[in-house]
Length: 114
Image (cartoon, rainbow, N blue to C red):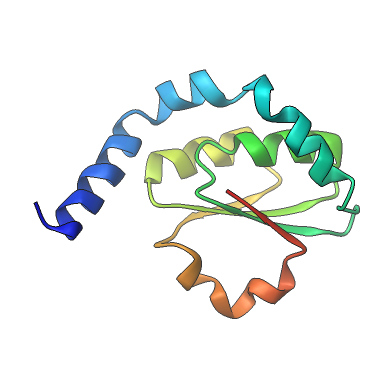
């Protein structure tokens, strides 16, 4: 199987199981200590890039703690993006091939999470 085929299978799988992924990880408590630590470095005016944002679980947690945080999320799977938009209505989420699509604007972000 070629690399492109693996890529397409991976994206299709995450797209197909986006809801199940959300159900398992949206409130995934083991990582909240890490997210809390990140909040220490963010301010109400910070801009955050959420790479492979999935259903927006990290963004959702951070925005709940700091509502004025600006979040921009990217993911390969359209269904993940649809869920992220529902879970973090104040964020901006879009399907993107990855960091290369936003590399020119990376300096505008205070932090990146994945």
